[in-house]
Length: 116
Length: 116
DNA sequence: AGAGGTCGCTAGGAAAAACAGAGCGACGCC
DNA sequence: GGCGTCGCTCTGTTTTTCCTAGCGACCTCT
Image 1 (cartoon, rainbow over the protein chains, first blue to last red):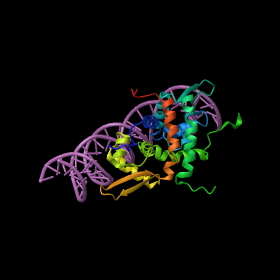
Image 2 (cartoon, rainbow over the protein chains, first blue to last red):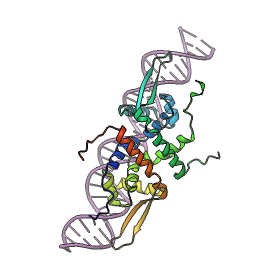
Image 3 (cartoon, each protein chain N blue to C red):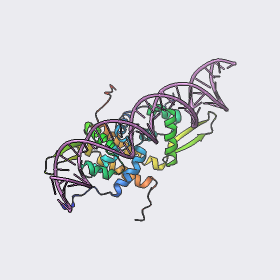
Image 4 (cartoon, rainbow over the protein chains, first blue to last red):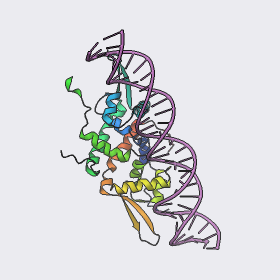
């Protein structure tokens, strides 16, 4: 082996693997994204991400909650409901998501040519 | 609060959806990550991401190349080979990946307490 | 009261993606 | 000639994701 190898497993890759353990799942990144805009209920989430089904959303929410990224709180108000919000850990991901969105706008082929 | 609604579909979410069209796939984020450390060959990629099979890697590479994120170049040297490298578009994702790795190290439960 | 809609969430079966393993033609090594 | 590597594709099986339907409880409309 020559000394060229940049491709040795470094901490960076390990952390990246952890990150993509969540973000690599089909909708996890999206729900984190809409949640970063503020707390939301189950139905609100479903609409915001658009195209996800109840089963999957429920799964992702449970998963995210278990990982400590989102918090599930039951609203005792007259109209009983459930709210999902980002924990500090999840909230610290927001700026990254923001950058990601910026990158996508510049480097990804626009799927919908919005006339604006 | 009347003007609370943060959950309307804004450009941010649309861009995020584009981004996760790629990063939401099981290995795309990882190969982008190792590629951000420098060009690599098919085999090098396979080792670096660790746990991916030839079929899937081939698919992801084709997909990423089609999207204009990575560039496939055939090496005419005596030991004929193929090299994959990030395009400018792909390279601009590197800092984001870096932040993501940083976030993961701080906010994600360490799965393997690496001695090193 | 009766009928219908929404809410949060779960269950079952179907489709898709990912997987592991083998193989192809061409190369260098011994 | 035998062997391993390279980049890449094919086949059959497992995991993941998806769609459809449904539950109990609440609210609204009539």
